[in-house]
Length: 127
Image 1 (spheres, rainbow, N blue to C red):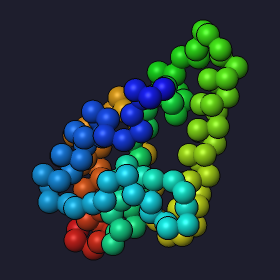
Image 2 (cartoon, rainbow, N blue to C red):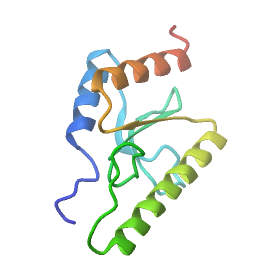
Image 3 (spheres, rainbow, N blue to C red):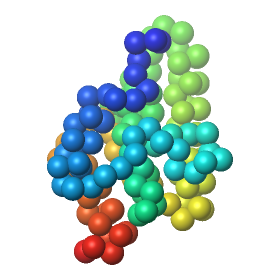
């Protein structure tokens, strides 16, 4: 479990590099709301946009998630709790006026970066 990264994964770093190249600045692994003990992968505070890049296994991707063969009760339960926590995070942020963008690690980084840039620029009134 120590080897599993909670931040700075390859898809995350690639998307960050592409978004930065489009001129956007952001916070990395930051709490969108100070009282919410959850961090988003990218946070655009002025635009109130929180971006999450979810791993297919840990967040239960409908396309790629495969239940574990060993200790399946524990790991499947953990993934279910992760998905529930993700939905709760989305609801809390939306209630506070934030826009939540979620991407799967298997999605094309260029597509994700373009959607992030467009959304942030729209929210900032630049488009």
